[in-house]
Length: 384
Image (cartoon, rainbow, N blue to C red; front, side, top):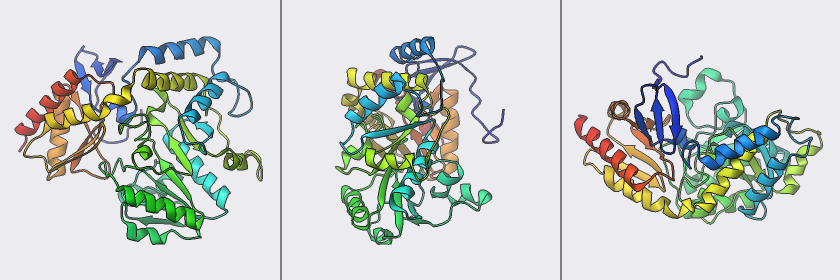
């Protein structure tokens, strides 16, 4: 298999259940990463597994997206849009977060007839050519240039930079809470001013909720914390309950622009796969029926209190989305590997090497959070 780095963690997985992953020796690991904010309701939730099995017995792929009527797609779109603001009433299902952002960028250009895209420094929106173009990490981009032209970067949470959004701008793509930058939380005033500016100049505001969605921040979507809504919303990661699915969502009026001039303005073979849609629908039902959002802030406070240590420079947190910052990247790397040895899975950030990330399942028990937090604190104590 192709590798993404010279030093993968190489945990050989036997099975996973709830908040745990087990290796081939039977060792149990407390998963405080959720597959990078994917398994928000835990691994292999029975309702998701049952939904997958039931759909497999009916049919799997039957046609490229949009041509046939498929009940799992329709039911998922109906339930999802009922949970969103009224103008976000049309879903285009894809396979991943990067695909969702690619579709959103295309849609914004089609709506506005403009070419300029604005994104934030230290942002992360994906690794495809288009999404890499609007990601603010130069180290990751330089080897793959030329990328998309007419892309401008501004500083996140800096109101002075919003003046760079003009009538040339097709879209501003932004994470309501920056994830890979190390959990950077904006002020409400900043996002409100951003929304106002986009409205005034006719630019589309794209919220990338791929990492923050489905309860990670304590709300179903992070934008709910700020009383600001986007023109286009992108989702993935925790959307499918462990299965690969993403979406970009906008108004029906705007989404219909992809049907003409040109026809088939955006196409996907496997997008909206019925098995993945069935899993995503079950995932939404679990979040609502088990009232998982109600305890996210309590669990976040509990974990933060458990890992408090004088060596920690800063804890940045919203809900169960953490960045734990230290003086050096070497310290972070040592902590991540020692935690793995002790059966606790943590991870790092691409654009914030001095911090490690925590994103446990929002369904993780208080007892498991305390245990894992105590292991992390002990390891921090052992590191120089």
